[in-house]
Image 1 (cartoon, one colour):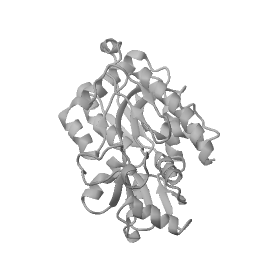
Image 2 (spheres, one colour; image 1 turned 30 degrees about the horizontal axis):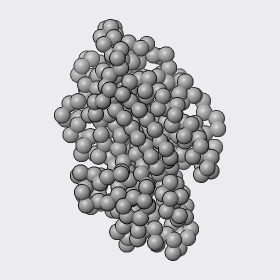
Image 3 (cartoon, helix red, strand yellow; image 1 turned 135 degrees about the vertical axis):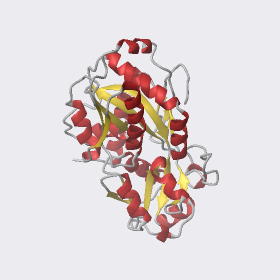
Length: 333
């Protein structure tokens, strides 16, 4: 896990997500003062289907929390509206640290595409820490008979409007990643939204959709097993565990890059000592060899931040995605 002293973020464009890691907040030592927490079971809500990265991270953290705090920690999937149902439930929960939210980049996308949200994505939450970052894999239908990004782009250009891409839902990170690909590659693809990553991935593997930019963690095992066909990775450099898998940038779309981020949040106004106690245990969990190995096998990297840095990231990302959604005409309601 990265351990540098500052936490800086910038996205110069949709193709550039630069995430810096951080150590504990300088006030992290105050976390030991939260001696009364927890005194009852804790719930981690996830707005995505089981098997997605926010779900995986929640289920990695839950047993660690249970072991340390001697309390039950339940991971609950509440699907719908691009993860907004889960977010609203947490926003409306008591600010006591007993209801948490495992989020992805989609949390910052929702305000950009939903005109009427029942919560404020930044004001109604207290960031705890980032938990991971990771690229995506470009998965294609096996029926297309393409093996590289160049081949896919050439095929799409030869038959404009005849191909589509699947996503984990309107406004999902996978949609924005695909829209970025369309823009930079100069191709036309129809959007086929699904209710989650597993469904979008399954339909592309089955040939019912043509391409899906899937979070690395959600697709890597299927690629290793030969069940899903990947033609590129969206990171700047090739992944160590897939050294023969080229990047999108080196095989057809120079400059293309897409990175997903993940984190843990609580309702706004959750006591600072509780936030810091949870943050401290997340950081301890992410240092465990079993966790780092698990994350590595999924192609995601453990990364932590101060609560303040995570809050600022959310605010910055919301403004960025609002601009991008306007330019691409992406709306969910």
